[in-house]
Image (cartoon, rainbow, N blue to C red; front, top):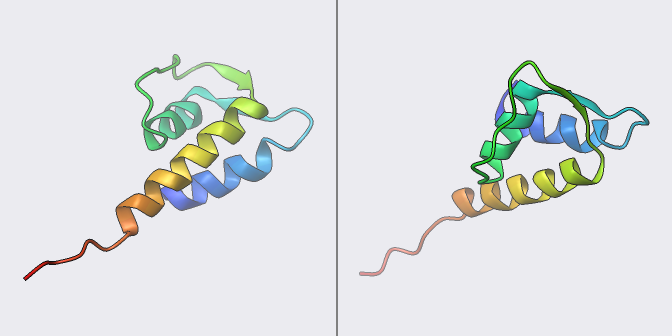
Length: 73
C-alpha cells in the first residue's frame, strides 16, 4: 500500500465502530504526519479522532511536498 492508499484507508477505517489499527499502520501514519512518537509494532489500538488528526496532518504534508516551488530567474 502506498502512502496515499494508507491515508485513504485510515480516513475511512477510523469511521468504523472498532477502528482497529496495528502498530505498523499507526507508526507509518505518525511518520507521514511528521510526528516522532512511535508505538510498538505488535500493538493494536482503536483510534477514531486521533487517527482523523493524523490523516489531516499527513494530507497537509503530502500537499506541501507536491506544491511546485517557484523558480526565480
